[in-house]
Length: 206
Image (cartoon, rainbow, N blue to C red; front, side):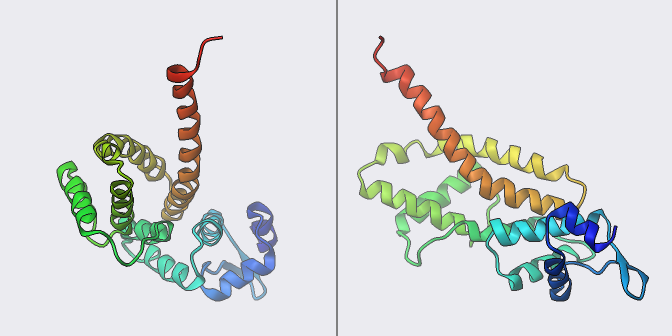
């Protein structure tokens, strides 16, 4: 397909596609003449990934360029690429309560989770645990393994969704939209389920 067809298929304007080509975010098409290039489905997948990383992941161009360079390597480490693509979705403060950090470390250890020591989500989880303790919600902290059971099942579903995609670009694209938009979907579904359970437990019969 020509660049106009690529634009029509992806919804990305031609000038934007040319910008991505100049920035090295999109590989060059196959030249059919000095002024014409043809593009294929891999270009479609790459464009969708770039848009997801920019619009949903909120990653800067330089970070995306580095990430894509790793993805285009001879033997890409998808685990590492996925981690870098999703790193910005979790934000933590500099100072984290040491006791809360230990509790999260112990949770990870007893569940046998393979998690890097500098994973941002470690600090985010510790911040929540520390806040719950300060609010006197120790009984909620005691349920952390029940929550871990639920999210482990969700994570399994997430990875099944990703791993069966045909190309590395499609895998990372699926992970970005599935995780970042999936977080919002999960929060909404949780509220719906809470309303349902509340009606069953607390609602007065008419």
